[in-house]
Length: 377
Image (tube, rainbow, N blue to C red; front, side):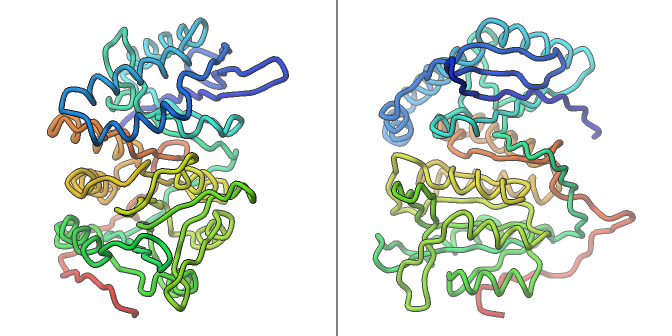
């Protein structure tokens, strides 16, 4: 079905006069307003942890309260008037209004749970309705065209479990992911391969010799405050820890044009950090040319994150625009399971319309069988 989209571009900005919110583009023109941080770092950490420890009713109350504080911090005065008018104009033309949030000028606010923005007047989460998909935008003024692909999509999975870090059952993590997504392989929509060994050299070799459309990383992330770098922890040839900064990883993915999406997921033993390294790496990957990235805020139990991953990749494999795929996955978790962690996955996007893939003209699906591969080809 053909969809029409308007973009509502909202940016946090900092000048000598203070911090501001700016609407840089929208159906209702531009606007500017003041910004006051709605949450402290301690409150952000406590919020993420509370989603997994409270009772069934408490997380729902918590996310509404936090979401409303975030909403009121941004949508004040002229910003709110511009938003309401943009919603009205989009409704008149039966269009969707994509909220594109850019915090590059104020990176210390990247860790705020923007996905939970809650409009108290309409009594709805902005990012839970397909009429207002919410993404974190990186605007590089360089258009990114969808990649022409004949399904199935190919996904390379990195399960990094280096020595020197808290170890986990990597085989169990891999097999659970395979069991969750095997129906997409049967339907000839998505093929999974595992990177063994989980080293940077092997990743470079695979990207050089094969074509992949999605990279899914499971492991540890760290923030080096001295170097001010976000890093993912790979393995070296001896199985020990090999930190890889976002610039190095970005150079690898930049040279692999077919790669459209990277998902960064914390392993079961990862510990929350003051600055979320997965969010930092996702931002940098887009600045190095990647069209889209997903950063999952914290380690989630398999019963929580696997159904979400299934819903998300099912839509991506159907070549749905990635922002709508993310919105649909969030909605399904919220409606079917009343799962308050639906906003723990942040989508970073630099494409204009969310389209990552498109079928070649006159393409037809095939019925060939698909197998999983986790050994070195």
